[in-house]
Image (cartoon, rainbow, N blue to C red; front, side, top):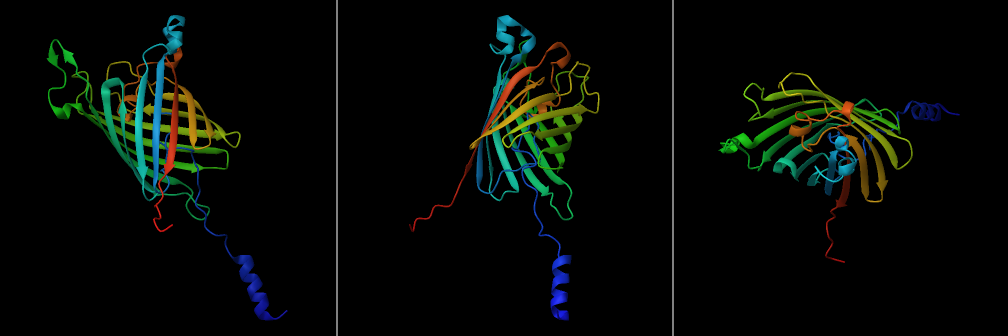
Length: 281
């Protein structure tokens, strides 16, 4: 064997594997309530239905929450380049219209990037007509607005297990009580364990760092089950949060797991890929 062939073989041995981007850290852009680092694929449109029944501690007369006190959100979300996405939604409780922007800053790979990072910014406007002693609760249009900013850091450890840490700040322009603070800071964790090709167990928890109200609100906590069915992802879960937007479930979860103040809920996601039409055929 000549020296040229020996050099070629050594180069092949020393050659590093091709860089591969880690995909499907989480299956969808949400886990239960919380956003994940995932962004829709290129030219993808996602129609989402989120539904929460009433608290289970309502008892047999209310069918453990199924008969009443439900909250529903309809959402439409889009990404053109697979890195930046935006969405809008409408929630029944508090009549909230929300909009958000989401950008995938870094993506995990098998070379030198061990984590994924995604940024999120959302705004929320309530159209609810509320009166206190015959006086309008929302005096000015700006009183109806709330905001949330998040940074999400995640790692897919293997084909089964993924973990994400979230840092969030929620700002509410008009708080319920004069002694309340307008800002809430949250550290959250979400995890997914995939035990079959199309099924996974999920869990999320948001810990509120500051005491912004004397009202006994609780940290948002949920446990769920994901199943992939063709173009749909069906998520069923239990959570103590009634709200379906960040300004609600992070700050104003009024129910507690300890007394069965938990709600059965589900999310349905249907993603459509929008392709350019070829009129020459």
